[in-house]
Length: 62
Image (cartoon, rainbow, N blue to C red; front, side, top):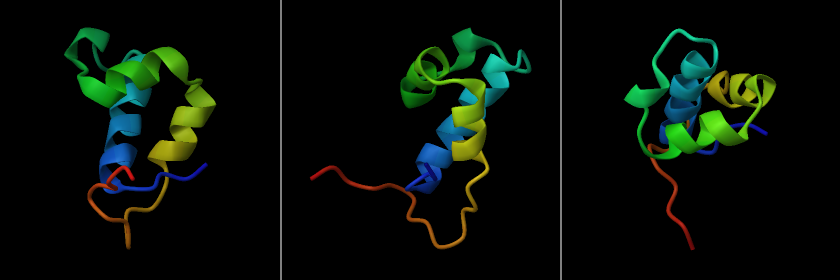
């Protein structure tokens, strides 16, 4: 599942770093904090590796 926005991709990258031990989990905020607890490393890697080109900064909820 590719990221739908740049902010989602960035949050996944931060959560992935925490899951790998490269960043403290306590430093995470918002979506990235939830992602690290609920998603596997493979799922986070897939979201984080999505190219940013052509993605909106945020996607609004409808």
